Image (cartoon, rainbow, N blue to C red; front, top):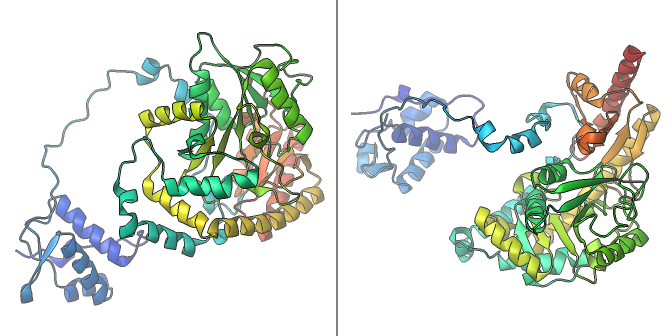
Length: 505
C-alpha cells in the first residue's frame, strides 16, 4: 500500500533546511506509526511536485533516510518504509494523574522563590532597542571558523572525545589552552590539577558556594558586594549561609567596610568565612578594584582567615585601559578561588566556564561536579580547544572590544545629551552603564512602560540587598544593539523618565 502524497505537508517558516525538514516529516510519520513498514513512499518526482520544491532535494533526503535505515530502496520500484525502521513503543494513552503532592510546600519553595523576580523576555531580539546584558550580536561572531572547529571536533580522530565518558576528568586539550592562553594573560600560573571546567560561571559560583559554605559545624558567613550580581545572591540565598552585604564605592568592595554597610566586616575575626567579589568590573557598577585595595583584601584574608571567590566578570572587555592583574595572580597564600567563563566572550548559550584554585579545593569541587553532571560535553570542550589554539578566540575578543568601544562612545554621548545620570561607568570598559534615575522613579515601572515602546532595560532593584533595595537604578547594556539604534533608544528612555517624574509631581 502506497502512502498518499497528501500525507506530506511542509508548514511555512519551519526551522532547518528543506532536506532536514523532509527528513523530520518522514521520521515523525514512521515513529508515530502513521507510516508502516513495507509501505511505499511517494516518488521523488511526485513529492517534489506536491511540495513545490526541487526533486534533487527530495532525492537527497530519501538517500539520507536510507542510510539511517528508515527507508529502503528497491531497484526500480522506489522507496519503502524499512522493516528495520525504529518504532515508538505502543502504549495506551494514559490519563494524567491527580496531583496529590504540593511540591512547592514539600520542598519549601526556596528555589522558585529565589528565581521569582527574574524577568527575561525570550523574544528580546524582536525589540528594536534591547539594552539588556549578556546577549550577543551575531554580526560580531566568527560563525565560519567556529563551524570549522566544531566539524574538526566531530572528525574520526576526535571521536572518543565526542562519545566517551570522561568520568571526573576534563578534556586535556582544553585544559592545556586554559593554562597556556587564558590564565597567563590574567597573570595566573596554575597546573592542570588546579583547574576544573564548569557549565558556565554560574555553575562555577554554585560549586564554589557549595564546597566552601556547606559544612563546618556552624552556620558560615558569606560577604557579598551590594549591589552585586543577582545570580550570586540567589546562590547564597539557598545555601543556608548568613549573608553579609557590603556597599561598594567607586573602587569596588572596600576591605574595611563603608558607612551604611557592615562596618568592620573584615575588622573582626570570624565576621566572614567567604568573600565573593568581582574586582575586574564590579557587577553592576563596572568599578575596577585598584591594586592597593586588592593587596589589602588579600592581607585581610590571611589575617582574619577567610577565603575569597573572585568572579572574573568581563575581564576580557577592558578596552579603555590595560587590564589589571587578577586578584588570583596576587595570591601568595592559596586563599583565592577564581571563576571564569567563555559564555560571555564566545556566546552565552555555550555554557562553559572554569574554576581555578588550590588542588585540595579543586578535588572537592570535582567530586561535587561528578555527582551532578560528571563533566561538560566533550564535543563542546574540544571545539573550544580548537577555537583557542587556532587564534580565533583572540580575534573575536579584539573584534568585540573595537565594537564595544564604538558603542560605548555613542551611548555615552546620547546619555549626556538627554541629561541622564551615569552612576557607574567604570574606567576600563565593560559592556554596560550603571544608571541612576531621579529619586522617586521606580525603574521597574519604567521598564514596563519602555517595553511597550520596544525598549528593554534592566531595573536595578534585583542587584541590591533585599533589605536595602534602591528602586531608581537601572542597567543599560550595549552588547547586542547596533550603534545607529542607540540614540533613539536613549531618547525614549529619557522621555519615559520625564513622563514618570511629571506624573509623580
